[in-house]
Image (cartoon, rainbow, N blue to C red; front, side, top):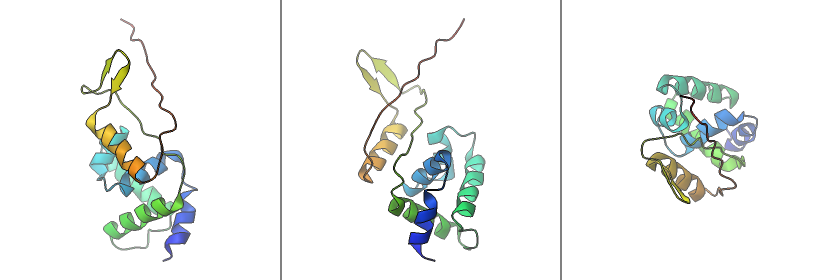
Length: 132
């Protein structure tokens, strides 16, 4: 299988699958991906990884580990451009005067993507007032 052919198919993935693929390229498990991206559980992520394998035409590969490696390598080669990181409220996240502190998982994920050549383009924070 030519990795370049798989890398070409990466760009056809919708953004939510690209985010999962970005996590895979960082070596994250399904459970870690679920936590990082706010999915219900690892099983949901497993279903989405299956969808990625299907769209990248990796279903016929026998080894799950090999599929993950080929998909991650293809993602790195593809230069897909934008990866969105969902920053969820967390008990460790704090806002003080002019500084927002991220939880450790989000900061680690952002650092990993920067190390892969991504640049932070914009950060968006959505504030919602709770009605009492």
